[in-house]
Image (cartoon, rainbow, N blue to C red; front, side, top):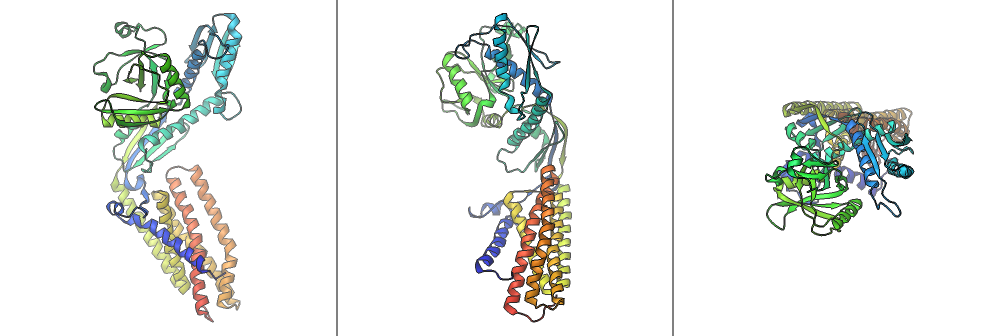
Length: 543
């Protein structure tokens, strides 16, 4: 029990040294860290919003519009499906009327010829059935009913709840990609309730700029242009059904009048796989390079092949950012958006396209800035609590257990080093509750040693030799140590899964502290105590 091989000893010492290596960057300036060799760890513990200040936003998610958009997308698919040549042997089905009722949320379809009614109903069912997998419940998200010569499509309540929940989750991911594209800012973005999102960005003291980045919808679409409608008719509102008038973006328009486009897009932004900014090889300025997924590449190739010489408008957030004329079929699944882009405009637009469109409109319900002075006061108070608690525990252990208390103190120092190293390795964000978790861990870390040392005292009182007493004490205390720390670790995991923000910070430091304290209290002190007892073999032990 007290004997360790040289490989085990080297492993224990090496693990503590590794923890120290990862912890050291926290005590270096950013400039010094940048001068370190490439193989040396440079990651540090990030300070949370409550410690270094930053921006706080509470956003509302318009989940009702998500349901509305889903139904309108289904209606667009139905209109597309009723076109001719949609498959082998499938002819056009004439639609007499296709409407969407905003109040009821239902789509109503009337067929011009009664003999086409069954065919139209089957096609509608095929379209709505393709969305069933989104629920994962084995049921269709839409119901299709036929009554009085009408085909009515409605969304089920289960689908509404599921799509609303997905909208919140997807909004969180889009916001995260927009404000932290590199993944190194340690922002906190979490749901609150059924339709709200909390955003905390440490170190950012400009919530207005943050809102400007977040609130851009980022809705990208590719539309056919209808040049048969005169600008004067379009300006007076005389638009044919299925047509919309869209203005040019400021950097692209140069005074151009709005353009009339086909309302239903040929390709949507969700089919764009990636986008990046780059130099325009054909002239001054910058361009945006993009690539489609397989579905988008197929549609893009088909459309460009069949519409050479036609204008194809690219629309972002309700503005035309480019309206090129198709010169030839584009079958590589990629393209570029050229225009009078500055480097910043190209970069931000590419980021919007790459991060994806927000699935729902976000409204700012609350915003505030946390000053760094409050964070500095919190750091100082937390540091004082940490130092006082640490010193008190060290003093108590030395007074109570002498030499073995010193071993426990060495293990406690190693424990703090390992906690700092682990948090740095994970790039964790430290908050005030996280500091509380570390202080709590320091107090808990010696519990295992107290339990072991009291067991050794009992064995010494029973007349056993110091070596036998130490072996028995470590052996009998192990089950109690394991049970206590496993239950604490499980509690930390539950808090991490169910909590958010500061609660998660507390759970992370507590879980890491439990793991490291078991190692240092049971393994490291056993190595130190065993080394002393086996080397000196004292006849008596004062404990």
